[in-house]
Image (cartoon, rainbow, N blue to C red; front, side):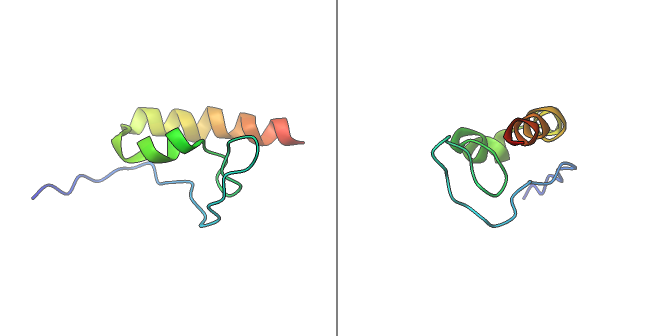
Length: 61
């Protein structure tokens, strides 16, 4: 049995509704990003958390 630990935690906050822009209202990920989260390695997850999602937050203001 493999129990691989992932250092980068999910940005999910439990508000799981996809809006008209195709983004989750809670975490701002796309459906593909949500579905692919478990398959991403730590570098991909970190890029999403450190670059992609903050840019989306900045674009909303």
